[in-house]
Length: 248
Image (cartoon, rainbow, N blue to C red):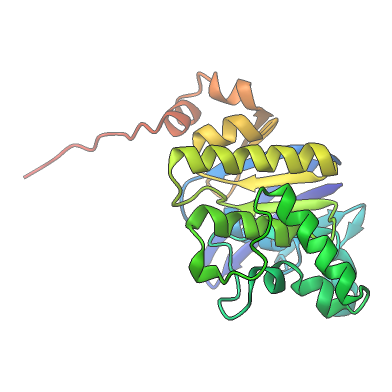
C-alpha cells in the first residue's frame, strides 16, 4: 500500500532523511521509532504529501505522490486519517463538530448522516453521548479518543498516529493502545504509529522500522527487535544511555 524509495530531505544544510526506503502492505500495523529529532514526523508528512522529497519516491497504492498537484493530493489524502500528537482539536468547536468536520466540509453527507457517523465513531472510541462538550471539558485521554474518532470518521484505508500516548499515564496509554488495535482489526486499516513508548510499540506493532542516522537502521518483526543483541537497538528499546566520561 505504501512504498518509500531512497527518500532524501534536507532543510537548508541540515539533512534529515538520507536514503530512506521501506514498504508497508495493506492491513499491516507498523511502528516507526527513533531518537527525538530524528526525522520521524518529517517522514510522516511525506507520506501524506505535506512535504515533498528532495529526491526519491513516495508511492501510495503504486502512485508516486512526490510531485502531484494539490487537487490530485486531495484524492490521495482521502485515503488517510491522522491522529496528531496533541489531538489538535478545534477549541471553539464541540466534540461533534470536531469529529464531523471533514464530513461536513465535504458536502457529501446530510447533517443527519454526519450526526449518525459521529455517534458511531464516538461509540467505537468508548465516548458515547459527549457530542456537545468542548475540548476544554475533556481530559487528555478523552481528547486523544476524540482525535481518533475524527481520524477514522471518513473510514480511511490508512491511519497515521503521531505519538498517540505522549503525556498520558500508563493506564490511559493502555486504553489508547487497545483502541488502536480495535480500529485496525474492525476497520481493516493499515496503521502506522510513531512512538517513543516501548510498551505501546510492543503491543501495537507487528513490525518495527527503526530510524537512525537519517536512514532505516532496522526493519524487523517486533519481537525480533526487542530480542535484538545489536547494541544500538538493545540500548534504544531498553532506554540505556552511554555514560560520558566526566573531565575537570
